[in-house]
Amino acid sequence: MKIRNKLIWLIFSLVNICVVMMPWQASAQFAGGLTAQQLWVDPASGQVFIRPGHGRVPLHFEGASSRTAIDQQVAKKVDERVHQSEMQMQASTTQLQTSNLQLQQQVADLQQGWKGYMSNFGNKIKVGTLLYGDYSLYTHTGFGPQFLTQTNPPGPGNNMFNSFDITRTYLNLLFFPTDDWLFRFTPNLYRTIGSSNQKFGTNESLGTSLNGNLGLRVKYAFLRYNKGFDWWQPAKSDTITVGQQPNPLVDWEEQFFRYRFVALTPWNYLSLSSSQAGISAQGPITIGEKQYLDYDVGVFNNASFHAFEGTNTKEAMARLSYWPFGANWRFDGLGLTGFFNYGYGNTTPDAAQIPTAFKGPNSAIYRMAAMIHYSTEQMGIMFEYDLGKNSFSSGNFFSGSGPPQQFGTTPAPPKFGAFNTMTNGILNTGSSQQQGFDVLGRYHIPYTPFDLFGLYEWFMPNTKISKDPLDFQRWVVGVGYQYNEFLRFALDSQNLLFYHKQFTFPAGEVSGVGATPFAVPGDTHVFMLNVEFNY
Image (cartoon, rainbow, N blue to C red; front, side):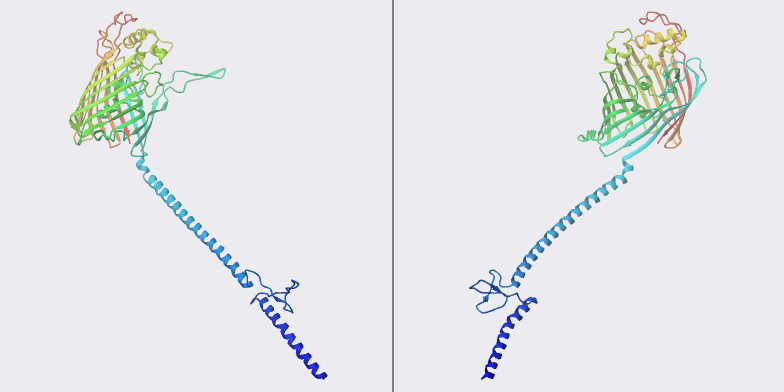
């Protein structure tokens, strides 16, 4: 009986142990990562247990059947966020690549444009130089206008004076930023004349350093628009120019003559500057393949390019050339040209209003020229008739050299005092009238590098004087030699002749001027060897 009871108790204990171990093993298996931890709850007490027992039921969470389901939901959310981030990153990368490609294209375009500009820079800018020089021998010296710009030989009594001269030096800069525009800048070397000294400190002074030095000033500085008349076919190549520029007559006539490095053209010799500051329009008028008209018209300062503008008015200039049979180039064949200039003396308005007996520099001024010309590749000849009013003052007449009284130099010997007073009285009345006749031309000797050229000018400074002692003739004759396309030489004779015989200028002919003996100035003769370098 006792043995049977012990056996039953042993069997019951083993069964109880097996029942307890099964859920423990399940819980251990979940802890190893295979299943979730299972909990039990006693509904009566609300206690939660980790092992099953009497009166305990499994504990379930709402919305999640197991730890695996929770992990899966979390993993899904993480995957969605990661995918969303990857899509955003990919979009940003694509946008960045596109921006980089655009930037690279812009840089490439910029580099290509800059390389193109630099490679064509040689076509956009041109630098050249121009030099006029001479050796001159004055067999006879006298008062009168200068033969070439900035040549100032001594006056009477200095025969056989000779000199090496630089009469013009240019450094030409031409810039073509586009096909529409041209900019030209041309500084000019010139001879300075000093007239005053400078006090320096208490006990000393300095002599002027200007006398005879070569100075630098601006001859041309202008902007030219090449498409101002692009809308009209006959004037398609015409231009508009603003700035300091060649005036309508002088440069045109110099190009016709081709020997500016030897002699000045008629009105340029008398008084008209070759460069003016203002605005102008110029160009040919063509019909088909031929040119029939060429014009240049503008409004400019009354002052020349090397003087201050003092007036409250401006001067007008116009040149019109006509080829009745048409021209294949600018000076081809038979042509007729007219020029008109109207302006005022370069003086301030308050000075111009002062009533004086001699108002030449303060008066209205006009210049006219009528020309007939014929030109071929081998030769060119021009006949010119000139008219003017107040266009030739005593300052123009004595531009070469003059008596001391003219320039206020002290002491002034009385020898030329009466002559200076007479000259100012004839030329600076404010109502003087001028008249002139000119011939100029050139001829190229075929199959040689030589030219023959000449210029003749007959000029009457004041036709209101019954017998003007200042009436003169100027003539130039010479031979030119073309060494190469850049270098030319010329050997020539230049002469200023006063064609009245010596007489005494009568008193009363001009107001305020008494009788003047030896009224006719002495002649001037010079031989020159000229050189031009033009590159």
